[in-house]
Image (cartoon, rainbow, N blue to C red; front, side, top):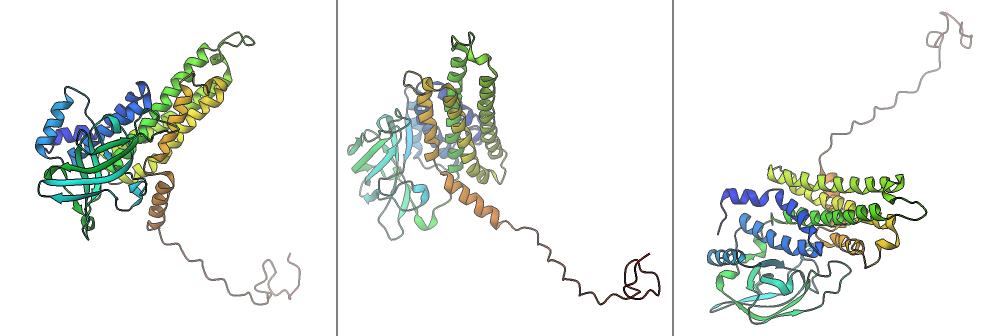
Length: 369
C-alpha cells in the first residue's frame, strides 16, 4: 500500500528523531527505543519505496492497533558481517511452485524473540541474483532463534542469531531486484540519523542521573550538595554543551531532509560520528565526575555508559563516514591555484644611475648622501 503524500511527509518529519529521544525515557531506555525505532523505520521505508503486498501491509497495520507488532530488517550474517560494507548474503531464497523457500543464518537480529515479521535480506542463486528483503511472519515453521546475544551494552535488545530452515513464504513476500540493477536505498540516511539520535537520549538519561546525584550528594566534609560547587557546575555545563551540540546536528540534518536539501544525505554521513562522539563524551564526563557511584550496578549510570558505546556499531562506522567525507572533499573542484610569478632576472652591476640613493654622476662605490 503506497502511503499518501501527507502521510509520507509525516514519516519524514523530525518528530521521528524526537520520538527516538523520548523513547529513551522508558526502562531500560536504549533497548526499548532501539526496538521501537527499527519498527518505525520499516514504515518509513514502506512509505518511500513500497515493497509489502497491499493486503499483508493492511493486515499488519490493523494488528498494530491491538498489540505491539515489531518489525526489523534482518541483514547481518556471521560470515558476511555488516552488509553495508558490501558482499552478497549467504542466506538464499529459491522459487517454488507455491512461492519461495528461505534458508540461511542471520546474526545481530534486534528484537529477534519479539518480532512479528522478519525482513530477511536474501539472494537467489542466479548468475545475476535477485536481492531483497523476504517478508517472513515470525510464526512461520522453520525459524529458530539462537540466544547468542551477550553484549557489553543494550543487553535487553534481544539481538540474537536467527536460523531459517526451508521457511516457506508466499510469492508476493519477496520482490527481489537483480544485483546489477539495485537502486540506492534512500532510507538508509534516515535510519542513520535516527538511530544515532537514540543515543543522545541515552546520554540525556545519564545526565538526569548525574543532576539528581549532584543535588542529593552531601559529603560531610562539605556540608552541602556537591551541585553547589563550581567544579560540578562546570562539569554539568560541559555535559549540557555536548548534548546541545549533538541535538543541533541531528535535528539540523533532519530538517535538511524535510526541506529537500540536495546535500542532506551527505551531511547525515558526517553527522553520525559527530553526534556519537558528543553523546559518548557526555556520559563519560558524568561517570568521571561521580567516580565509584557511577560504575556500580546499583545505579543506572553504568548501564547508560555501556549502552551509549553501542552507537559506534551502527552504520556508517566512523572510519567509513570519514573516508566518504574525505574523498568527497578532496574530489571537489577547487579554484585554480595561481602559478608563482617567474623569478626576476639577475640584477646587473649597479651604476651611478641605478644605485639607490646615489647622486647623479657619482662614481661607483661613492656613498649616498
